[in-house]
Image 1 (cartoon, rainbow, N blue to C red):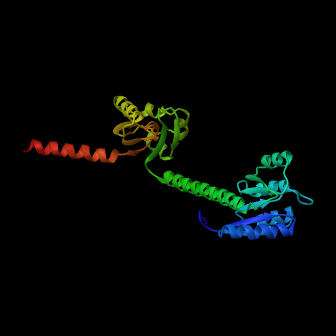
Image 2 (cartoon, rainbow, N blue to C red):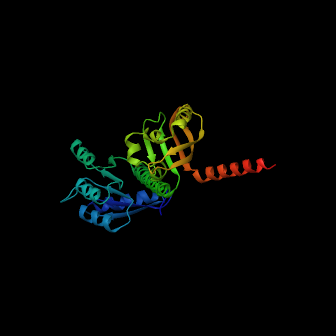
Image 3 (cartoon, one colour):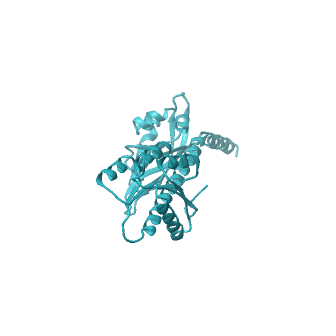
Length: 276
């Protein structure tokens, strides 16, 4: 798996062989991480994208038969997020507008005097690293989501005022007897199944969490199955740099078995006390 700091493969598409050779030497000299492959037409370019491991496409706009924008549209049909930089000797508002509409990542007009190899290399590396970091973050989120869905605990995230549910896993239905969709539609719906004698205490814990203090609270849930469960909720406020609460995160765990053991032990101790 590639990561930030790995080799970057650039595909440069231009119908001028001299410009191809010049840019290949310039980019690879500018940054040793860059390996530049070439194509002489839009058709060759899209085939290279389809068949090869390309991290970024660098293309001229003016090419015979099909322009760089035509190549860009083909690339976007294959990979919607592949960095694509239009690097052309001449530019116009029409060409730039077409490229932007087609989803170009960046647009550079080649200056007639001086080398822009350093600029192009920096932009290629920047766009590729950004894409890799975004993909890495997306994979991490996916793994965390999969882990959350296998948990027996209810994992949840609410807005700071508890008015919006940001996340809840599938265990919610097992513990609270409501479908996750119920609480997504009405974030306060879980209070409906909290035992009447415990609801004020739960609400107070929610208010304290919104004010910035972590909470732990035990309460009873009147489950839709007719059973009464004991649960334990842990809640932590998440704040920004200024200390303002942005959201509250936590988990709720079924502790019915533990409560039953504690009750049975208490009864046994009471019985023993009668004979001592």
